[in-house]
Image 1 (cartoon, one colour):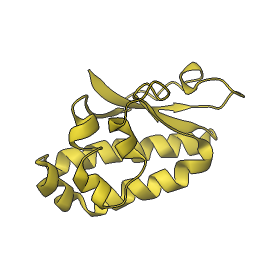
Image 2 (cartoon, rainbow, N blue to C red; image 1 turned 135 degrees about the horizontal axis):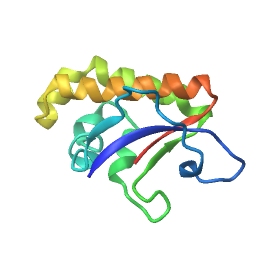
Image 3 (cartoon, rainbow, N blue to C red; image 1 turned 45 degrees about the horizontal axis):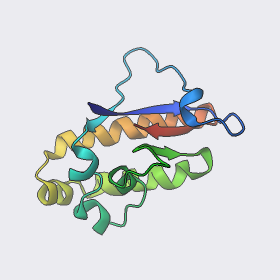
Image 4 (cartoon, helix red, strand yellow; image 1 turned 90 degrees about the horizontal axis):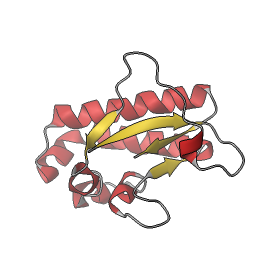
Amino acid sequence: MSLDISVWIPDDDAYAGRDIVADPPGTSTGVGAEGLRSELWGSAAVRRLGATFLPRLADITDENRGNLQVPPGQLDAFEREVALLAENVEQLSAGTGYDADRILRYLANMRHAVQRATVVRGGIVIW
């Protein structure tokens, strides 16, 4: 299995998975293999940089079902976290053993999803 990022539109109290926006053709939505949930996004290296959103992918609970849901009101903070990780990609690469270019591709997919979500006043979900 792999982790993907999708855009969703709020619908009162509906769970994010109900109103997923179709991705434009050619959109890349991959943000890593299942193992990266803890090996990269939940790693000590990511947490040391002060990330709070992406480490939640490693904290699987009955409530979140292993998904990271970021509502529209938190997109700016999520985008800042993604930018912080991109700025420190060499440190992340050294701390996790993952190739810096690979990490940057995943972070670029996150940035693109945030841009798409902003246009439709939605949020993102990584699952």
